Length: 203
Image (cartoon, rainbow, N blue to C red; front, side):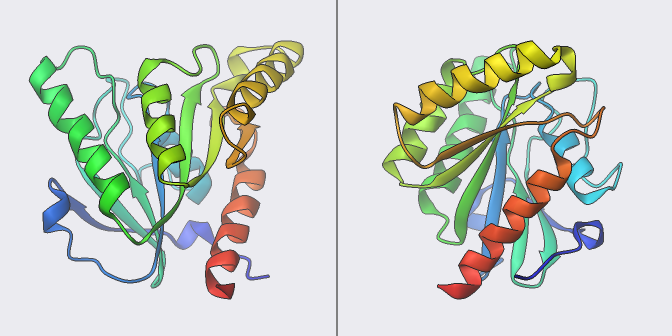
């Protein structure tokens, strides 16, 4: 199995509209989640680069569709965070529409990483996205992020609860604990992405 060096990941391009994306072919894994779920920090931890994906204490910083190159035929895509409550409603609708358009139309998209704050999993917009992904038959890895906010017992309880709920909906979900702060789950995430990429090569 190919073992990838995620530290070599580099920024490629940003797009405001799906129709403007001029990157073709290859294989994409998209990162998605609420604007305060720590999604950009997950990408930075995965690649061991503090400033690769622009993260901020102000939720909603990721407003563009950002592409990062792991290999010439393998890209990570950072989608706009949804549920940014201080943005005007019409702006939130535009961002959400952009996300749905990418999910439904992008043929290069093979897998998704859905980041959730472990304290508030499976919120309304998460469930809407999950239903879209089920209909698209996409495989999804759910990260229960910021797990350092809980003790070990509470972490494992939340992991069991969320896993059980998702498996009632589809078999295409995996769930794992993650913390950028405490470096929990980074190696496991890298191994799963390695497997996704090798699956793509073997098709």
